[in-house]
Amino acid sequence: MQYLSLWIEAFAGLGLFLFGMLYLESQIKASAGRAFKHWVHKTTSTTFKSLLTGLSATALFQSSSIVSLMALSLVGAQLINLESAIAMIFGSNIGTTVTAWIVGLVGFKMDIKIIAYVMIGIGGLGGVMADSESPWKSHFGGMVGFGLIFLGLEGMKESFSTFAENFDISAYRLDNVYWYTLIGFTITAVIQSSSASIAIIQSALFAQLIGFEAAAAFVIGANIGTTATVILGSFGGTSDKKRTALAHLFFNFSTGIVALAALTPLVWLTLHIIPAADSVIQIALFHTIFNILGVTLWFPFIAPLSLWLHRFFIKEPHYVTRYIHNVPLDIPDVALDALRTEVMRLEKKVEEFALLAINIPPPKVLEENVSRKKLLDLYQENLGLTYGKLYDNIRRLEGEIFRYITQLSLKNAAAGFQEQIASLAEHTTHLASAAKAIKDMLYDIDRLYNAQSTQEQSFLRNLRYQVLSSVKAFEKARKNENHAMEEMEAVYRQIADSHKNNMTLINDIAANRAIASEMTTIAVNDLHLSKNFTKALRKILRLQNTRQAADDNSPALP
Image: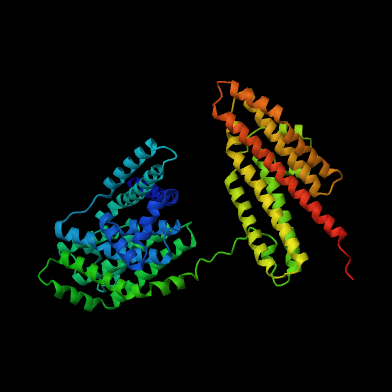
């Protein structure tokens, strides 16, 4: 039962650790203001500065794991590059030896749990008290993230403390000292702290339960064992985050192999540098020497190592386009056809985005002949979708189309070809305007769904009706239905000329003191945005009609 409780505590510590990692990264992204970015760039602008940052931060936090995880978070948030992250990890390997010196010199070991409590306490209270728009809210959130990582690591270490305390190293005396490397690796990987593992071996040395060479092999294994924490922290991260973890693994393993191969001369060197010192101090020196040796060997090769690591964790490119990325620019006429098809696809995306914004499933409008009133009555609930992601995808698609248009325009200088390119560019611009108008209404629509007054509910229904009418008329025109253009013009005139009715709704909102005063401004803005949306769709249809008329009047090819 006791061991079951320990494993449950270890599992909870693991959960805290992983959540803290993800939360810290999100807060770093949120708080990445100018001052923070300036600090990061200043301290990691070169690989040598990054090395010093990793070294000093590890000496301060007393944990190479924490600093390595911080490097993962920064590279995952794209605030530093891969080379700087690798250099920080190299520095942390030297900085972690400070704990062994503290244990050896003063017998002191910092309590990480106290740091965790302080950071979570300050961060939690500060986050609650800070204004939601203040950058300090994210800064305090970052402190909570750090505290959770500390607490998770401490939880895992404490849950395994019984195993560590009952670990009688004298019972595992082995003839081959290299077995101690495996023991050091295993213990460090389990308790998530090379400092704790080295403290164990320093205690054994002090009690003369183990020889110095065996202790040195154990320290090498403990150094390699720290890679388990970093690999764990890279799960679910970006490609560069995983490459940084791989660099840490590769560096520690290669350094460990070199140190093991040169174990006897390194031990001899250590014992002759401070021959009169206590063995506890000597093992701290050995830990420092072989880490400095590893960094000295690898530091000049950080750039080639970074380049080599880019061969790993390569994801298949995700295309927001469906047609143009498959068609080379070398055949302009074929590329132009693909471009037209892609723009038509963007039209469909914008229509769907507008319908989802007013919480009506697109198939009900685009594929079925259902009346507007019935649609509004059927779908009155807020769908609560992630609209920001939908809009980001549309914006990326618009960007890729504009890039393709720019590149394609250089392939054929013929006047007719350039006119078609310019027409499609204008088409895409109007679609971008339509999507932006809907995006700017999203927050207000969501707020109106939570409104209780009949005036606000009436305004919301009227706003939804306008957007729905525009989309239905536009879709009919896309399908070349009879009188579709006339219907689009009628919808636009109705929205443009309904000033008197709209002002009545707005006056009703303004007259109701139970409604927040800013709702009047929101209503005026949303009506303007609705008109802009319809106007952009109308311009697209007019542009298409002009383009079609030009094609019909063009001379036949011989």
